[in-house]
Image (cartoon, rainbow, N blue to C red; front, side):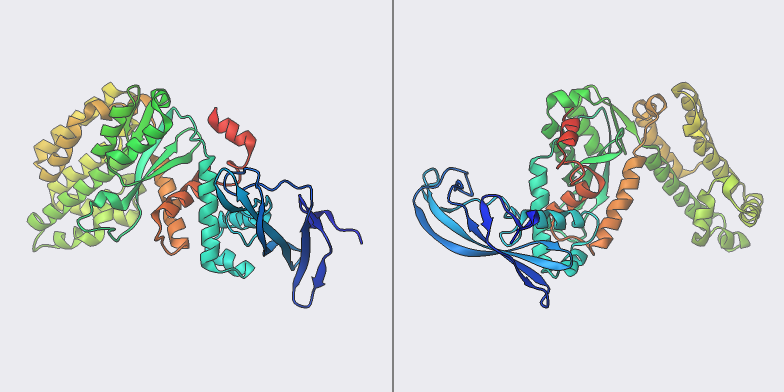
Length: 426
């Protein structure tokens, strides 16, 4: 009887194959070839005297709709290097699970890149915890072969990872991940736990001093710990504050100012109804994007109270700030906005302006490089979807690896390809 090639295994002879079609599987018994080299499964040193053997049953990649069961004896022998009895290495046994063939484990891992572990386990009738372990071990194995790409422009942002504290009096920073992305390839290249200085420093330390010198631009928010880490490790890098975060902080200040005016200027009048929290987003919306009804609403408010008119003018002027073509023109607009804020006496906006004015030397870099961390904001949405798909993660190390798998290079499309690994190294 001719044995099909897909039922033949290196170093072993396929004796026969039995079909149990009514039970849905095919059984393949193997016998080790006499001339095969037996090496230690730990150090790959040639094994000495035999110390026994035991039966092994492996599940392989399915043949059509039938499960494949591979049966063999695995031998033990004395390892001169380990100086103890060790099991022989069998190349086609999975590194992730001793009960699966490597091709089947790789197939499961590939599916876990695009589907939740629970669904993959259900598809193949596997235990969910077993499937999770296969995926986790595979990710760690891929990480050991993962070269962090050389980059010249990166985006740094934090993402909220967990709610519960690991230990008492834990810093809130520890509940975040620091996500580093390449602005050129638009891929996540590293994820660190926490959002303190050490988190970003970990990435800079991993890529090395020479690679740090090649980084020219770092787009980030105004988080001080990130600034410290970048200045410490990347002497040639220019920090560019992200316009999204600056506008986000500005809108918070505008909303706080609206609430103050609502309490002080509109209390006890019809204006109070038009300026309440229900309409807060209307006051932050760009004028040319409002509907006719919304425009009429704002016009009624501005006619009734000049303070809301001034707030609207300041907001509209700030929206045009990042449209300026150079730092000199932007500085003039920025100072104009400051004058309007002080003339209006808006305390919340004064505080926002003073903090931003101190960092003008960094803020002006946007008008030179025109980069933002909007890429990271988009990736954060993917990460949130990933977390919802898994109904949350308990193991933070696994969560970090999954982010690098879905949003970066830690997957079968890149790490397992020699050409891609070489490209990443370059």
